Image (cartoon, rainbow, N blue to C red; front, side, top):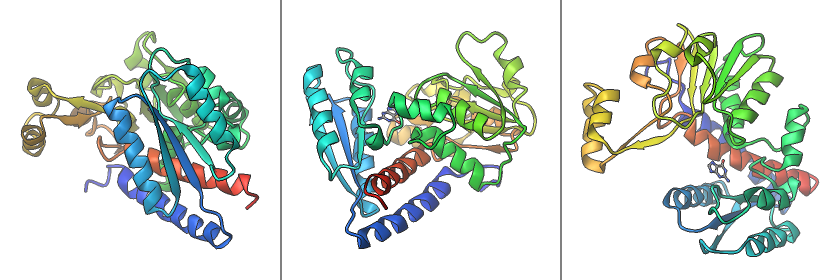
Amino acid sequence: MDDRILDGKKVAAAIRGEVAGRVAELGKRGVVPRLDAVLVGDDPASRVYVGSKARTCAKLGMASETHHLSGDAPQEEVEALVDRLNADPEVDGILVQLPLPDHLDTHAVLDRIDPAKDVDGFHPVNTGLLQQGRPALVPCTPAGIMEMLRREGIPIEGRRAVVVGRSDIVGKPMAMLLLHAHATVTLCHSRTRDLAGVTREADILVAAAGRLAIIGPEHVKEGAVVIDVGIHRITDRSEVERLFPGDAARMERFESKGSVLAGDVDFVRVAPLASRITPVPGGVGPLTIAMLMANTVRAAAARRGH
Ligand code: GUN
């Protein structure tokens, strides 16, 4: 593989290996880390994510349980479930799959999770600890990106980092982690003026806007490290041809599956400029679940005094 490609699958496998070792250690002391997922409704993507989290737990020797509530479950029912999981000493990590159906108050549900079991790092206590640079459970996607940068020996201190996208799940915690690693950080969003002018300053550019191919060559300085958090399923043939011209393998995948995945970065046009770049799929995606497992083991060890 082109050695400029940042291989998230490889880094995720290394993290999972270390987590499995830690699980085995805890096992000797009678502790089996357990992750409980709460899934409300039948969003197909959410079902896939939750299923894959449960399978990864099993592979690493961890316990897991999925609690599936109907799409019209009232707020009280979801909160009562969270209360029950908070009170269950066997449960180390609680993950409420987002997005929740519109009738539910997401903040009220997340605020109810015991911060010590909040393996997504979405509770305001963990968000506040992260902001202050104190030990916390950190959201998995940005935590995974920091792990990848560290393991790949990409320097951060003193460099310019630009994050595009200000979500609570990725953009904001990503900016905070880069800041604590001593980067000079700029956080851009949909109302940023002259986006390309700002992103061209970046030594490290993190695209987490949730918009297909929003980052083109005009946004990237030569030699930048480009991290693509976006994941979009393209079902339109002309879009595949536009983004991946002459890519026979990708077209073949499109013909057989009816879709291909692409990110927030126009990979074909940006890759020649970048010193390192994550692909989609196989870049940031695999890191997120690996870090969820790492957070769960950490929560188990901390809660149970190991
Ligand atoms: N939906 C999209 N990303 C995430 C995530 O990291 N955690 C949860 N719980 N839901 C999500």
